Length: 60
Image 1 (spheres, helix red, strand yellow):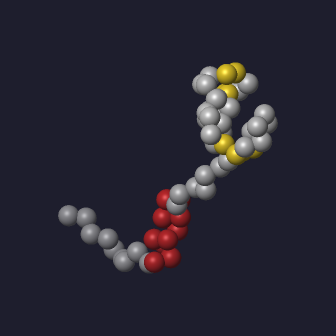
Image 2 (cartoon, one colour):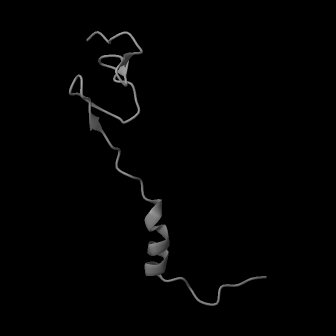
Image 3 (cartoon, helix red, strand yellow):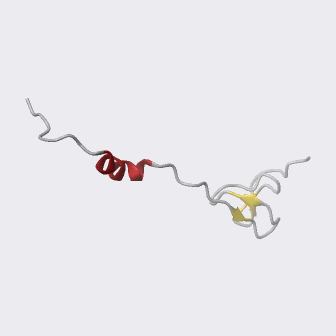
């Protein structure tokens, strides 16, 4: 059975786990409405995606 030669130090463990963090969600300003939205997502306020009308505009 394989047994580790030495204990992994907290610093080494932290370096290994440094890539496991969650990335900050990115938002862009929509060029038509000026609202913030996620990239590659439909703007729910206007119902447009890449300049085309995809959904009916949402009524508030």
